[in-house]
Image (cartoon, rainbow over all chains, first blue to last red; front, side, top):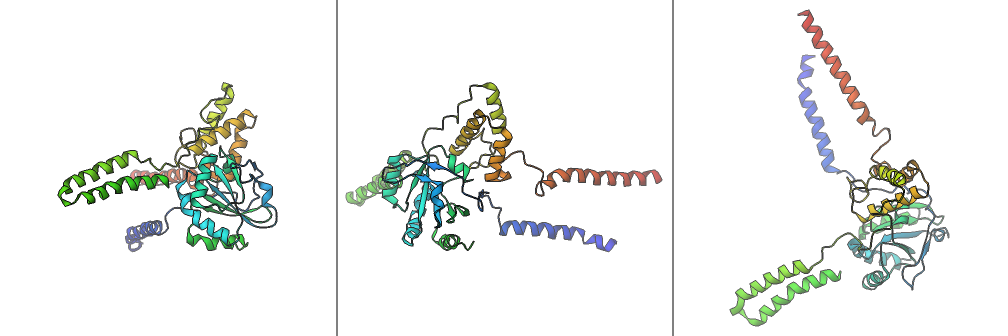
Length: 175
Length: 167
């Protein structure tokens, strides 16, 4: 019994070492994941923000084909970084709609002419109410919606080149 | 993007001007570059994560009925801002926190109960969003640990008292 107790400090140290090593290898996830993934897209109807694009209605996500729903804004710097990837996805034939958060028509028009325009429709969410109903906590975020209007996946932050395969898989229902 | 472009051009142009003047003015060129750098830093807008749009109607305006406002306030101090982790939406200046306050006040005004609004938020953001977390498998250690430690302390104390009495 006494002999066993002698090892106790070492065991305690090894345990602590393990906890710290685990924490170093996989740091805590500080992202706020939407709890709406796997659920039905909440009903909403947003007006158009620029004249050349129609507004966005949740019913448009139930037409049988999976779509991307991009939450973005012209004042958001990482949104510029992800623009080329969205253009790539569009070129692959992925339909993309967007919700513009707290934006104005001239600012948005400028953003689209500078960074490209991958969107079919853009809804105007001036006070972030639809963003809140989606459980989204910032820009940019991208939701994958299947053809029946169910949210299948959420991508938090800008889309990078290496994120494209996962998004395509989610669009094809492999996630 | 345009902001970045103007910033780099203010820094780059004096260097070009210095190059045209030749090596005899090297000191002046360095000074000019320093001035341009300082000017560039002063003129450049910080890349904020805010929209610049005015806050939503009820974000910073109290409800007219003090009873309803008190209800909204009590809820807002226990809802966590989803941008600035560690502040309640009542405390935060973030755009999204303002929009969350506007939503809370709007719904209280429409007669919704604070509990229902909290449920709505938790449904979307998880327990993360509430500062009043429910008892669950994850939060259980928080509640049980003090009781457990007290019990262990009592047991240890009992043992040492017993020994002393015997001796």
